[in-house]
Image 1 (spheres, one colour):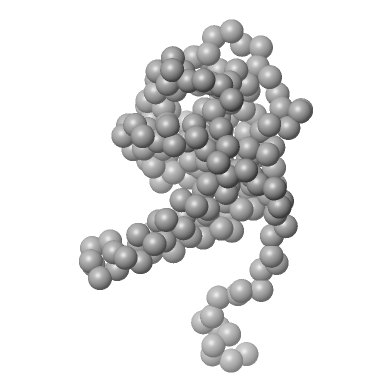
Image 2 (image 1 turned 45 degrees about the horizontal axis):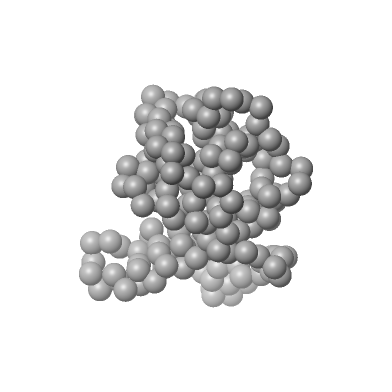
Amino acid sequence: MSLNSKIAPDLSLKTMELPDNLEPDNPLWQFALTFWRHLPVQKSCLALQNKGWSVTRILCAGWLALNGRTYTGIEDATVTEWRDRVTGGLRAIRTSVPKAQTSYNALRTSLASLELEAERIELALAWRSLTAPNSEQSTMDERDKLIRLNLAAAAPVPGSTVGTRQLLSILGDHLLALQQGYSQP
């Protein structure tokens, strides 16, 4: 084994099989853009992401709740693989670039743009499975309860801390407020 093979990353990953007909500009993406405009939503989502949560899973849970549908937390394997290999990889690279040194700002900005585009594709992949005919419809009349249950189902592991519950409460409150002016696709 040469020295270079010990240092160089393993680039022998198999190319992902992705659908040809993705709809990146779908109602789930439009919801994500609208929801993300609220600073408390951004802060809560990023704080949860730092605790191991997936923001795209949170967005899927919220969008489904606003459409009266249950989020089970089960997702298509392609979505998970994309998140782990692409979105997560870009995020790991971006967060490893020093923030304090201004000479790296252009690189961090470019990586952040790529990460956002990866999240957009991730949501397009999720959109395909969330709009499938077998998507689970909720029988709950109370939207507030559905929102909170869906957000809990987006958790990386069951259970939550006081801090996590506070962040989820902020997101739930914003989803309820957004519901007032939200038009379903």
